[in-house]
Amino acid sequence: MTSSTIRTYLDGSLGMAGRLRVEEHTRKCELCAEALQGYKSRGQSDLHSDLEFLSRRVRRKYSGTRLFMGWRLPILVLLVLITSILILLGIFYIMQSG
Image (cartoon, rainbow, N blue to C red):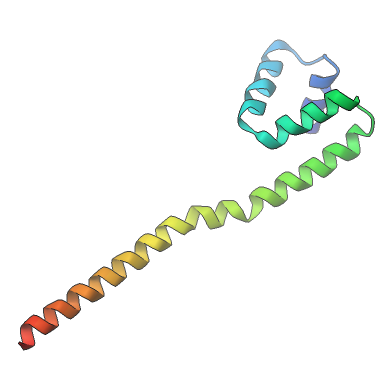
């Protein structure tokens, strides 16, 4: 969510389609849901600095983990395949020499 979307959502000037998108997003994104709940409970004071903080937190959370998590499974699968091939080659070699 952008900071302008959050501002217009909180001040009630966001259209119905936009409100539905925000509400759908906050059902899926725990970080944004917590942020919106905090803004509602304590008012909109310091909203700009809070939005900047939230934006940095989101970028930090998803910048490195997305790539790592995206590569974790393929690397493990590759290692298992290589290990399996080496074991099979070892068994084949033992059977051929015996």
